[in-house]
Structures are given as C-alpha cells and as structure tokens.
Image 1 (tube, rainbow, N blue to C red):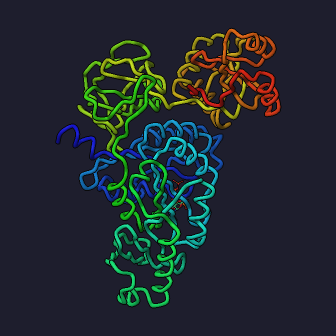
Image 2: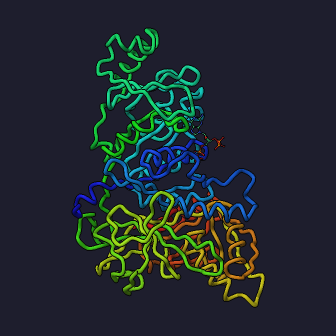
Length: 529
Ligand code: G4P
C-alpha cells in the first residue's frame, strides 16, 4: 500500500460523553466488530468511581488503565481506526480538551433517558468551536427514555447543533422493536435478548411495502411511516461536506450494551468520517500528504513504576511518515532526537513499530524532553497551534513541607506541569508558586505523586482567585499598561511559558479592571494570537 492509500484509510476519533452515558460500552463494541478483542468486558473503564476521590490507590490504578486505553486502534474492513480516549470525569476535562486537538472527528454519546448532560455540553462546545465533524449516538434505547423528536430538539438547542437523523427508533424501552436505518434504508429488529449479538437486518427500500406490517405490526409500521415522513420533512438531508465542515451532525440511535445499532454507526462512520485533516501551525497549514514528517505532543503519561521516572509522550502524526531510529527535530529545543522503540497501539496492547502514518499516534519514551504542545519535524521549524491552556477553576499556593527536598519538589512540580496535570503560576510580587487546576482532585494527585515519585512533600494554602486571564496589551510601552502593572502588581503572575497572567479574585474585579484598562485584552485561554 502506498503512502496516499495509508493516509486515506485512517480514521482517528474520540468518543465524548457525560460519565455513564455508555462511552466505554460503545468503545468495547466497536473493538469487538474490529475483532480486536474477543469478548465483552475486556475494555476496562477508566472511570473514577464515585467515592474514590480520596483513595490514592484507586487513582493510581485508574492511571494504569488510562495508559492502556489512551489509544485503541483496530482494523475494520480495510480501515485503520484509532480511538483516542477522553476521560469523562470533569476534573480531567483539560486532558480531554487536549486530546480533542489530536482527533479528526468525534462521536458524541447521549443517554436516551438523561438527554444532554453538563459534560457533553462543555465538550461539544470545544468541538464546535474547532469545526470538528461530529456524529451523535443516542444510547440505551432498550430503556424508557425521552421521545426521539424531543431529544433531537434538545440536542439542537442545548448543544447548538444542526442535526439530521440517519437512523430512527421503532418504539422505545419495553416496546423497543428496532431501528429504521435511513442511511442504508433497512429495518433492524431488536431481539430483546441482551446476551445475543446477532442482529436481524431486513432490507426495506420502500417504507410503504406491506411486508413491513408483517414484520412489526400495522400499527407500529404506520407510526414508523409517519415518523420518517416527519423526519424527512423537518430535518435537512444528509450532506457529507456539511458534516465534514462541522455544520451538520448525523444522529444514530441504538443500544451499545445490546450491541444494537452499533454496526450501522460504524459502517456509516468509516464511509463518511474524515481522513487525517490538515493542521494549522504558527507558520503555515501542514497537509497530511506532505512528504516530510511532522507531529505534536498532545499527552504525556508518567510511567507507573516510581523507580524509573520515564514517561510516554503521545505524538499525533500530522504529515509524512514517522520512522524508527530516524533523527527528528525537537523544535522547542532545536535539537535532533531519534527514537529506538516508538510504540504503536493496537487494541489494548503496545508494540514497537517501524513506520507510522498521518492520523496515527505513537508513544515515545521520554526522560523529560517533552512538554504538551511540542512539535517534532523532519527539520522545518514549525509550531503547531491549538493546544491552549484554559483558565483553571481552582487556585492554591503550594508550599514546601520539607526544606531538605526543595530541589526534588521543584523538579517534581516542573515535570508534573509539563505533563499537563495542572498549571503553575509564579507571582510577580514575591515569586510564590500557585497551582491552578480544573478540579480539586488534582491537588491530591499532585501531592501523592510528588511524594511517591519525587520524594518531596508539599502543603497547600487557599488563594482566592476567580479566573486567570492572559494579558495582551495593545502597546506594552503605554502609560496605561504601566499603570496596570503597578496597580495590579499583587495579582500578576507568569505562567510556565513566561506569559503575563492576571489573577482576578472575582467576576466583579475582572469587569472593573477591564473597564479601567480598555486597551488591554484579558484572555481566558493562553493561545489568543
Ligand atoms: P461511560 O464509559 O460513558 O461512563 O459509560 P459505560 O459504558 O461505563 O456505561 C455506564 C453504564 O450504562 C453501565 O452500567 C453500562 O452497562 C450501561 N449501559 C451502556 N450502554 C447501555 C445500553 O445500551 N443499555 C442499557 N440499559 N445500559 C447501558 P453500570 O451498571 O454502571 O456498569 P456495569 O456494572 O454494568 O459495567
């Protein structure tokens, strides 16, 4: 197979959902179809179980699982599919945001009874802003849930999407009989036996055909005809280009647990989902079929073995071929590195790979060279965009609790921040260190890992900060900016890249400060240019 064909057969995507909607179950069924796993239950959930938030062993165990499920790759009918894991737990939302920079499309899973939930809203918003193509899968149709039309309305309104169903349920919950597939024009009947994986698919090219009445009864058949007529009247016709542009989202219905409606989803997915997409860098747009290799780090995972502090950096290949033992340019360090044992991922296994293609993820062993967002290339100095830091939600001072170990503490903090566990801000006034996180859980993780991996002890002190804003003055030499820096000195800090950040203690302060200094821009993300 040549280079172009290798690119054309790759689909790299993420499944996003609110916890419990069925992401793990759906992933597992997709892997079953690809023959990558043999039985249900093989994919471990990376969920942090309720009540486990202070149980460190549980957190460590989960970290182990999340390495194993970071990338799940499998082959399906000639297509190479890479599923990137996105933690659903809200305290790890930033991890998920970063992973979304490495996907070419997403599948959004929604629980038919719960409808659109909080985490789904946040994650879909990020995808919408980046025009990532999305397919919606409404799950758990074997249970009583909301009316299909009401749900479609809810998806449109709450998620601000423009949807078109490509399948439609026949009944629901107790009365769930199957789905009509508008994409393939057939009826798929539900056996109701949750242990059974075999489905019965009946081609119905014309809904007015009387054989439909025999299959599901006249009343249900008439209802289905009415519903499909309504669907076709209300919703736009599916258009692949609009889907790829992120302006139209096809919807499928099914039950992941019962393996129902999953094949339809997968078959459609491999046909319509995008091949590896071009990526914007600070310098230019990089096309996947360019000859020269380029890629970027979107995730770093510290190893589980505390004795060896090596880490695994996950690189998404944007262009060219990545080859083992070939020196590549680490752009930030301006030095060449070569990798003797790059890992590729296949189902839940890692294996050393000689060549990888755009769309693929390789895991590189790292002893501290990489940071999230780093670019690797064949030689060109390009910097990929799109991995911003967002303003954290929680802020605490971090103090050294063991003066003999300050070196270890600093090193530990440094490396954990490179991994993207949290963000470090250093106050301009006195050099004190502030750790900002998305969820309170991270503080415990940091404390635990500093102690167990670096032998350092820390304590925290509360700090009243509402948001961190990255500061962009219109003119850095203006009197206004000088005045701002003088007056707000106590609230100014530098992030890890040395960018200036204003720590606003309340929405009110932020608003007042913005009004007072109109020539300064206050950004809630670090990447605003
Ligand atoms: P998540 O990764 O999105 O958090 O969800 P996960 O797949 O773990 O599914 C959450 C729960 O919903 C699981 O039940 C799972 O069995 C169930 N589920 C998934 N798909 C369906 C479906 O189509 N129909 C029904 N009725 N249930 C579904 P659990 O009791 O929390 O876990 P388990 O003990 O069964 O594993």
